[in-house]
Image (cartoon, rainbow, N blue to C red):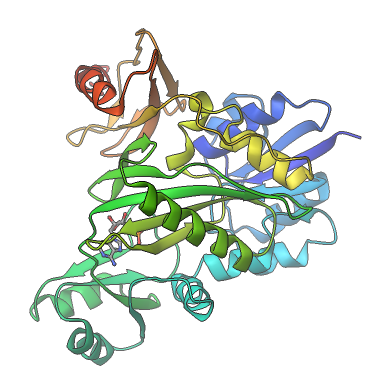
Amino acid sequence: MAKILGIIGGGQLGMMITEAAKKMPEYISKIIVLDPTENCPAAQVGAEQILADFKDKDAIVDLANKSDIITYEIESGDSDVLKSVEKNAEINPSPETLKIIQDKFLQKSLLVENGIPVSEFIKIEKIEDIKEGIKKFGFPVLLKARRDAYDGRGNFKINSDDEIQIAFDYFKEQNLLLEKFVPFKMEVSVIASRNTKGQIKTYPLVENIHEKSILRETIAPARVTEQVTKKAEQIAEKTMAVLKGAGVFGIEMFVTQDNNIIINEIAPRVHNSGHHTLQSSETSQFEQHLRAILGLDLGSTKLLHPTIMYNILGTKSFEGEYIPLTLSEPNVYLKMYGKQISKPLRKLGHFNLVAENGETIEELMKKLEPLKEKVVTQPLH
Ligand code: AMP
């Protein structure tokens, strides 16, 4: 019988999960999202909405009572509350996995315990711990919030002694960790999935370009040697063996100067660097996630066409309503998220530029440049 799907978070990821779910009516009869923003992106494409904060206990209980299965598009949900409603609805990935992943210190500790390479790190409880860490790692170092950080907002790079106090004060009372800075060659990621029966599939390695710690472009496939690709795939597989639970995971990695791979962090959910799969692959990451949590066979992850995904971010200089964006170019697929208000660097949409007739990534890169100009947000009034 078709199931009712509950999603914690109804932003763009919840929106694209909802759209994929609507194409599977034999398995999913209804989608309900929990989100604090009225008419959130997922609600605009047909999800019912519970209007409440992601951490609102009563709202999570309400969602569990109304749903057969629950998943999430954000990792900041209250894992203890989720654990307590497991008897009402099946939750994937599991609250235990969420609890570990949502705390960067626990996440990295688990990886290290299992022999998976990460940048060196230590737990920070007082300012003296930072000074100790710097003695060990040298400058620069990154002070990071252990929880609730995204798009680089939870990071502070410390370059000199003068910045230690400023960095410590920046985070106020939050739990912290200190990490050695990695002068990486490239940022890459693997979108991996496991279904409830244990079947695992990974998408090919992609390359990620960030601007101010926010993802700007994903290049599929990554421009690295076969050897680097292999190493990344092996590490992704090893990581999936350590993480429990079903669903799609975004595994972010660095390629070091000596062509080794280390993990930066893992997201227990569909991931921005997987948006290219909407057009580049037979199975999108959103459908794959649903297949995984429903216990269906996972779909093909083969990259059918090289693709560049470009994130449309709000212009730095203004906040407010913006002139609607359109793009009608061959092999360009624009996806806007229905957010009426632009804010500096807010993720408003993305487009995928898909190769045709054996076009190379270099050729796509040239095509991309003029397209970037066409998606700059301008004030409506
Ligand atoms: P995070 O929020 O921890 O994923 O970090 C956001 C971005 O900061 C990453 O995509 C990297 O560009 C950068 N970053 C994070 N950790 C490190 C590190 N240890 N060394 C160098 N850059 C880092």
